[in-house]
Image 1 (cartoon, rainbow over the protein chains, first blue to last red):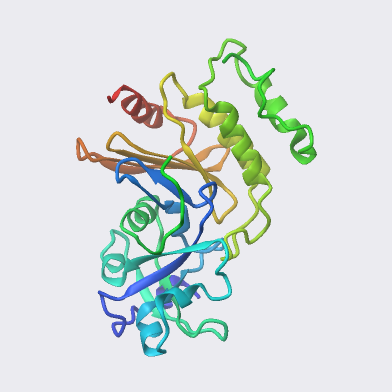
Image 2 (cartoon, chains in turn red, blue):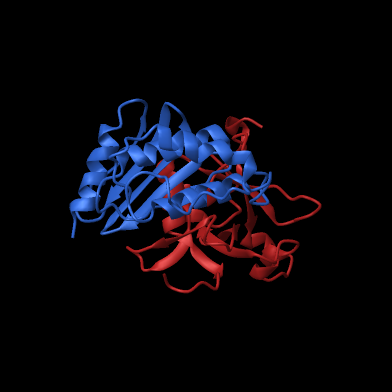
Amino acid sequence: MPELEYQDDESIPDDSLLLRRILSDPNIHIVWDDNLGCWRPSSAAFDNDRNGNPMSVVLSVELVRLNRSMESALRGHKDGYSLASVTAGFTRNLSQIQKIVKDPTPEEPAHGLVAGKKTQSVRRNLAKNSQWIVEPDLPKP
Amino acid sequence: MSGLSGTTWYNEERLPYEGFGTSLAKSTSPEQDFPQWWPAALSRILFLLELPENWDSYGAKKINQQIAYHAAQILLEITRPGIPEPSIVPTVRGNLQFEWHTKGIDLEFEVKSSVLISVSFEDAVTGDEWEKDLDYNLIPLEDVIRQLVSRT
């Protein structure tokens, strides 16, 4: 669906979380940030899909409604994945407009999409301001 | 370290990429000094080339071998003594991205083709922040690499 057809869903509160699976392998999408003194997701982990379609997330507001834990966002993918989050409000206020919508699927009723151009700086800001929900167990380099 | 011959990064068993290191070596000057982390960086690129389709569970593409080759070439081109080891990460589009997050600087660039890279730079010390698409002119990238190296 073209980006223009998405309307931001205001029923998704600014303080709710957008959850994103991250491969726990530090050789792939987790980088050591010496400035922050921690392992964090790479900006490459916060991108639209390979064809430019909106970025998939799990919506915490929907998990709460479904009486599920945040960690359940990893169901079906538990082994080898960590879980990172950014707030909906932070995402909406990035330099390029990002629209957040509900997109339930049979596999994940809490599925959502973040539509909008993901420039390098948008991705970097998402990555730098993300928080771990399920943190990778990695030693300090 | 000088030249690529005699280094241990090249694994004869990685047959699909047999020509990768050899042709890269031919493209470099025999006098070029390689950083200590260079063999590890090349091993890492070879590792990323072996990721299958959908390696991120979100439908990511396999890493494009030509892109990987160009990425290694660009990394060699901008490398200078004292440059810290970059993180090397795959992107959903099958490209490679290099990242440095140190000394107050966040520098990232994604190699999208042989003539297009997207650079993002943020310096917490000076407040400088920009992003640019570069083609053949790598000077803006070389300038920030120089800043990164010179900062103590």
